[in-house]
Image (cartoon, rainbow, N blue to C red):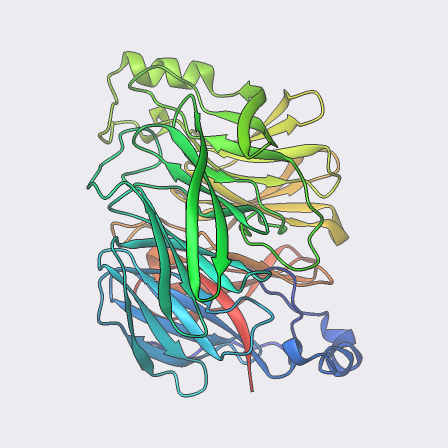
Length: 455
């Protein structure tokens, strides 16, 4: 093991499923009855374990959250393991994980029982993230070095289709050098490839004839700047997959990241899919002044002396009320958007690098992870007002983001889990006291992951 023992324990914690890239637990005083009831469902049977990719120690770390202990420490063959996901989605039975090694052109497979590597799946590009299609039984994987996407059939671990431009690129808009954004399924047989370099969204239709898969480009949409992601269905907006029970829609929302180089502010775009064609039917910009200031100071593609001068849109989450969108601004604000009127209604001060928002609807809370700060920001999601900043780590000790992309919360809204990635500390926040209650030092810099129940 490459980590210290957990620092302190509270009572037994039991967690229940809330999202594809999330987890949580029940209240201490209700743990026995709720745990027994959830165990009746196969997907809840076992010990809830979080798996994260450690981008500096090149490993996958597994955490038993009930006991706050490391149960897996797996060295990867590839470089920069980042996104971790179940090979066949949250309801799958194949008992393996897919590990996205962002600087190596393959995916690594991990056995959920033995925690051993099962081999690699070679790709025509390095992998960014994945989104599972439960209807067709296929994983969609987007690219880091090339604006490409690949379809993988988890049963065979075979790449059945690859599309996009086989060209090494380095996009310059806000949001980094990844060639693509998050992968996303628009419906059961249609996905989008977010080509960040040329500011375009390509729409592909997937068909299967026998054992032959075909992905056909059916339309393209030019966007103001690169697109980071389509706002997902989960409470943290990270789910770009399709489940059998999903309700079809033709309306989507996406984050345009912005570009200080071209003096273009970030924005939330409203998109419509009709006859296999995406179109922009509405938009609302934010951070116009900060973008203009960054442009005038020439902060184009390099770190300025004042980190607050950097601006751009990172990640957005749909509010549980269905009327609002929360989107993080790297300049240190959470922007509240009325999606019905497509209008910005409020800016809430957070921390630099305001990143992901996780909603806790049971408590009318929203929790913001600030990628460039050592605290999270807790917001009253009913009043759209900040409650407090909560320190979750020490000062920066590694040249990586301070806080993880992935966070967890439970179905009853009692605890919140995430990584203080820069310090290598997994932590728990009691949402009744809004205080950190347990921590686990894993070392390294785990940044993104998933959870599953291990028997």
